[in-house]
Image 1 (cartoon, one colour):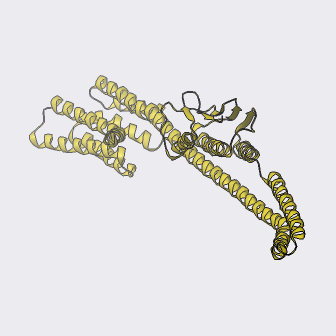
Image 2: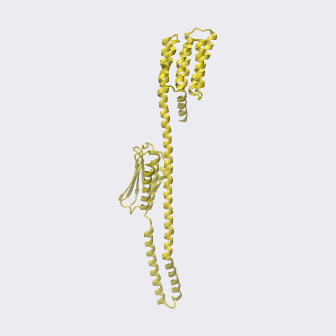
Image 3: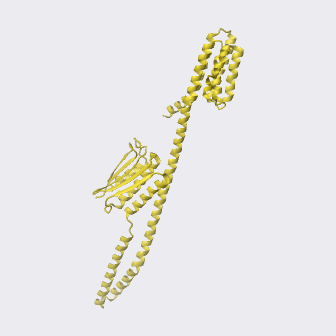
Length: 379
């Protein structure tokens, strides 16, 4: 594949130089056949024409265009004045190179027709002028314009790709910061919960320990008092357990709430930072959805949105979560360019693995935008 690409690049770069070289050689053959010259003069004509052909060909690929333009002009004029008037048939190519070198409008390519005054075979000279003008206009007026347009499109595509990559990296960084923020919040909640458990239960448990030690000391001498102390300790511990349950129920964060909060933040980032409309839709009873399912949904949605921002060139992203009787269905879709052949990378492989571990299935379709369907059992 690389060899074919390199060959194509070489042909594209040097084809017109080859065309000019062959063109001048054909004119050289015409000059030799047309005239009857001595051996010495024929050698001079051949050398001069070869110099013209080389200069005109190198001109096309050289950075020093003006230098080779001077060489070919001097060679042609010398050939006309010193060797043969037939060298005038190379004049249209020289004048066309002058037009190209100094960026003169393409309408001046036929200006070489002024040389018809000095041409012996005026008809042939006029035909060569027209042919040369057509060849040059086709290359510099049509083909070269399309080539430059294609290069500009490639450059714009590269810039756009870099911009998308930068945006995707920035989004990933923002997501990581958001996750870190929530992790810090969880750690703070854990610390606060630990403090509350200590404050509420520490005194009660310590008091129960002291009472149990007293109970053990008087168990044989005063059974009635010991029984009374045991009853108070049991009540105290039972109340303590009730307080622990209430505290945990009150402090335990809901996985759904955390997932919805982060997905809403993700959609807001798409709208505010990238100008992409993003919607989040959640339907159904979320009570029976486990924490592990919400975690997998959150990670896969973040990965899917990142892929859309990076590759799809979309203007809209939709995250839809539907909770049914036995399964949860999550669909992340965009209206971008799509991709008929999906190539699995680390991101897609990670999405598939997370869903597979939960016993679900995932389907990725790129024929009409980018669509990811996930179905996870929750029964």
